[in-house]
Image 1: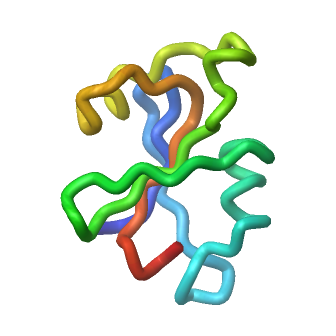
Image 2: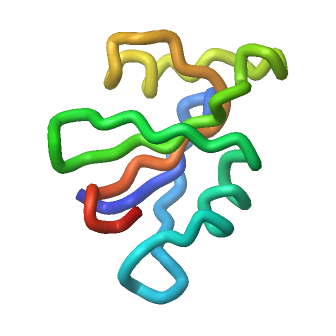
Length: 84
C-alpha cells in the first residue's frame, strides 16, 4: 500500500517519508497535528489521527471512519506498519 493523507473532503494525497523509510513524528505532526494517535487497522496498516480532533471541532472524515468502523475526524495519515 502506498502511504497517503486522507482529508475529510475525501481528497487523497500520496506522501512518502522524507528519508524514504519511515515517517518521523515531526513529519506526521506536519500532516495531522501535534496531538497524534496511532490506530492499527489490519495488522500491517496504521492510521495516524489527531487525538484531540473532536475537541478541536474538526470535520468528520467519512473515508477514514469507514476504514476503522469508528468516527474519525480531520486529516489522517495511512501508512504501512514499518513506515511509522
